[in-house]
Length: 250
Picture 1 (spheres, rainbow, N blue to C red):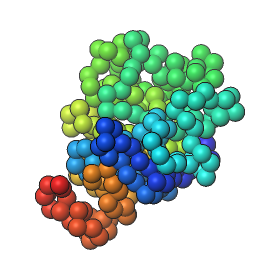
Picture 2: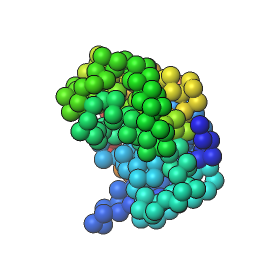
Picture 3: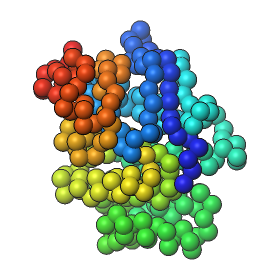
């Protein structure tokens, strides 16, 4: 597992669209805690920040570093020597893009793109699907899987590449509790094995179950960042106190 991308830091981030300030973050650092949760109301900039830190979007201004080096641009061609760095940063969206092929071949495709021979890729894919509790559907086309199975497949595909850090945008928002439990179990296991997890979630109970660190965002700004236990017990900012009390953040 590559470690060179950690920690991931960003400074003076700004994103504006049609004169509306969507993101304004002075500084943020992730990848030091096993699991970091980004929370806040709709439109707070959570997903935007996640995609910028994960290298999927470029901010209007500001800089992002992976392991102290400039993050790879989402639009620039990646040199062969940078491929390991790119693969060390994983991303799973709320509605993952899956290939029109079997569950196994979705994972095999990712592994072969990584450089594995077909036989080894298939062995690793089957093992990853078994670990994800998907052994019964290995030959089922991905499009025929339930939402929860598709999300577990996407997560298994991401984790089998052994990223140093994995960003997840509301991975359980569209699935039922039966599927949420195994997804959370997969994330806990990955964190225990050294993969850093950064997750956007609206579910505070899920955050309490998973997170070691919490980032609260509001109106595009990072309002508070601290360890999960003190965040929930003694939040520092007024916004955090209001949010945890169930009040609307305006």
